[in-house]
Image (cartoon, rainbow, N blue to C red; front, side, top):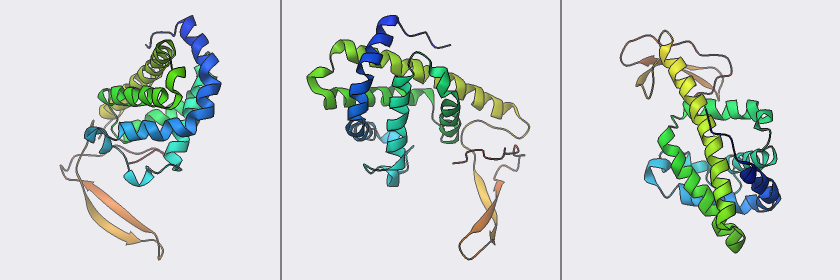
Length: 195
């Protein structure tokens, strides 16, 4: 369970949330520039989504502002956090990836806000980041473990081969995939995110 945020951190996040929100469109591209400098992280991203006006950048900006806005009651973001956790699991995001994101985010806040990003403010945002990161890490582990325990489930990457390709329309094709290891495959849920 993630350690609760201190009252001091909550007050600083509330006080600085409007400033971060006003600069979020500058912070997010800087954060991605810093984050994607690490080759082990670059491999996790679709690089065609890494332009300044991308939906991925907009989604992160919106999530950052929503989290800061609801810092005292993050439970209102439960549905959004569940979608993020499900997507992270589909992309094989692991606990060791989170420090890269935290460093990139805090570095971007410091770079964009300059002297206004005092050590006290950066420490508060770091504490808030790790509260959220640990919440996601815990939920993602539950999803990974649940998938692994199911009949036909597994953890991590698994090789599949294309067994059939069917044309549904002139622009749409369906692919039937089979596991290379020949073992069973768990049933997918409607609407489940698949990477």
